[in-house]
Length: 148
Image 1 (cartoon, rainbow, N blue to C red):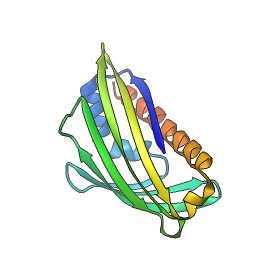
Image 2: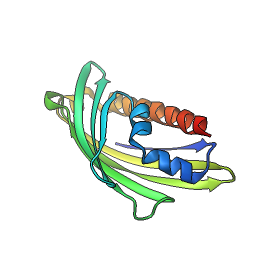
Image 3: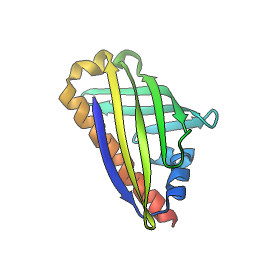
Image 4: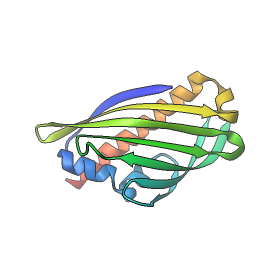
């Protein structure tokens, strides 16, 4: 499954990049996030509860960041397990482009799921993933712009 989108955030790129690296900001924006711990500058550990169709599961996982081209570009990869509900793994490439006083955030994300959630059908999984991404970026935009 692949998703991509872009969002314009009325804030300078440095502030958007800093917010994408702030665990409190991310925790507030990730739907269902119960815990987000920064293990190092490039590793995060998360606990998230999600409902996908009739399946509700608590996922625990790790995320690794590649900031070698930051702040203009960076990527992340991760995997998580929801016990009997299944697993998810994937990654995303993020680009932050300055546009005057604003920043255009573009992302391309890929994910694979397995186990019980994979049996729900790709249309439900894709629509849920798009909805969750939309919720995250809407909340992220709201939080970052409010900091200005």
